[in-house]
Length: 331
Image (cartoon, rainbow, N blue to C red; front, side, top):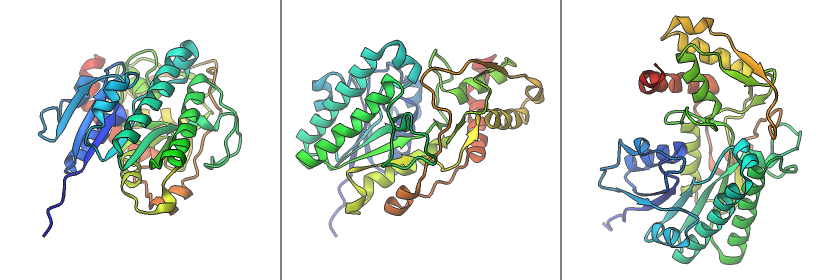
C-alpha cells in the first residue's frame, strides 16, 4: 500500500488568536504546520502548548518582506493566511500601516504561493467588506462601499485573490469572518476585541463601556466554527467551491446588550458579584456598521458547513477558558 505523504500547512499570523487555534487543531490532525509571525499583534504564549511539537516550526518574519514569505512557503501544500492588522479604529488612526500589512503583505504572500505552486491559498477576509450595504442577511455577491481603511484593504484582498486565480491558476478561497471570539483572544491593548475586554473588566468588577445604546447587532462567531470553515475550504474537492468567498459565521445576530447579559450570566456562575456590575454607554464608534448578519447558505451548500456553536454555546465555552486563564491577570 502506498504510504500517505504528510501534508504541510503554512499559517501566517499563527501566533495570533485565530492562527494559534488553527495551528493547534491541524497539529492534532497530523499535519506539519509552519507558523510565520512577526509578533506585532500575536503572542508567544499562544504557541506554548505546541512550540516543541515535532511537526511544528516557527519562522519569525514579516509578510511585508518578500524573502520571508518565499522562505515560509517552501514545501507547503496549503496556505492559511491569517496575518493582518485588524481593527477599524486602528486603520482610521494609521491607514498607511494598515494598508502596508494588509495589502502589500497580502500580495507578497500571493506571489510566494504562486511561485511555490502551493495547492490552495485560503485567506481571512472580513465582514467589513459589506460596508454601507443595509441588506440583511449579508449575501456574498451583494456588498456596499467600505466604511474604513481596514475594510478597503480586506476588499482589495478579495480582488487580488480573484486575479491570481484567473491569471495564474492559484486556487483561492476567502473567508469573510464575522466577529470571531473564543479561547486565546487577547483582552489587552487599545484595539482589544469586545468580548475578552468585557470579560476582563467584569472579572475586575469594572463597568464595561458599550459604544452606542447597545442595540447594534452582530453575528458573533465562535472560534471552532471558524476552524471548521478553514478545514472545509482547504480540503474541498468541489470545483464550484473554489476561487470564491464565503461568509464565516453562525447565521444569527445578537445585540451588544444581549451579549453583555449572557456574559454576566455565565461569569456570575463563577463569581456572583459580577451579576451586579453595571454597564456604561458611550457614543457610537466611527466606521461601525449598525447591524450585521450573515447568510451561510453558500457555505452550507458548497462546502457542507455545519457550525456547532451558537453565541450562547460559544460564550459558555469561552467564559470557562477565560476564567481558567485570565482570572489571575485580572486581579
